[in-house]
Length: 485
Image (tube, rainbow, N blue to C red; front, side, top):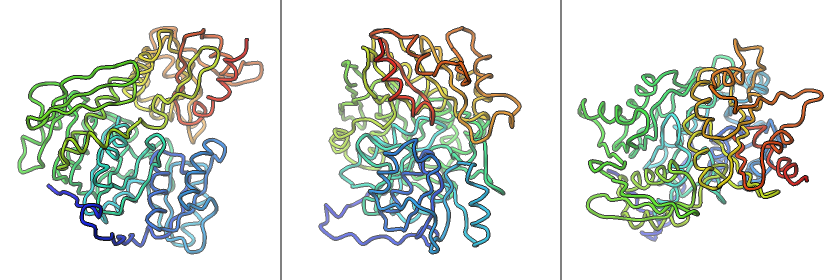
């Protein structure tokens, strides 16, 4: 097992690691898709020349401001650009792809760029799974503070950046499912399974499940995760998550293979979660590994989130970091942006936001939201992609039953609905067995979604917005609507 000695412990100055030529000067398309802003920030901190074309400049101005603070230029590609990194927005792909082809520039996806960067780091820790990687990956960067890691994340830890260069010796990467397969692809694009070129020291697997259009069934996900696991020195498996036990069994049946470390509640786990206690403000989690017990605080709601942080602790322990150092590092962890983040309170009603996409994540965040109120929980849900929403309609409908009422917004997609056999929102509505989901369809004479939500809540209730675009932007106007008498 590799360990990392930092310059802090040796007193020796760090020498910057060279960047791959393809990533020395890049132009990034649509940094709003998960992971891409973190990649751009990390590259800029590694002294690459990075420019960005934001496709939704008004949808997330704080993200663009953060990129500028990392010396990322918000402009068109300059003549010295070596390659383009595509974030997944089809509205700009064809024009830019044609331009890139004319100049002979390669187009890279998030996955390939991460692999090239990981190859330059002596030690890589990968967080991979069909879902639930975000909280675990962000917590892991804090747990490993004593090793001064760099990271490329799908979403930033609260108050921090999604991309950071810790000196190049240890890199944490969030291998969230590839956004390039979300409804649309540039010309000639082939889905690139995350981690194909990685050989991590430690891989934390958070879930192995169907997540269309990346993996259409659990078998595809298992095959992919097993391949990544067998390229790793150690694999940490979050037991009780979908497919994880089967993955662990596969790895143990066929030897040689990586060292397998399990984390969960049962007594036979390598890292046993002895207990968790919700105080009303945070979770107190106790774990046991190699005969030692450690307790740390997780200041986020939801059992799922607390268990994700425990899995991150287990990954740090598997890397060889002492348990008490991991606990000290987690003392600085305050959650993840847009994971049950409070936007404000208006008219006695709390408004929070969620970045959940997979049905399991949606259900977990709704259950976490219920821990924060004694009133009703009303969801404002924007489905992500027609392909994904149609394929998972039944599971999404089931997940939404964790809310008392749901306002269903139009699907966020790079293609209009008529390009698909079925509208994703309609499929979700038809799959539901209750009348708790109300579809909002924009049009003349129709109330705005904020007004519809305001009509469903009363003082003491909680509203959770879930979605990548419209749901993300609705917060301020919703708070204003709730303040009306």
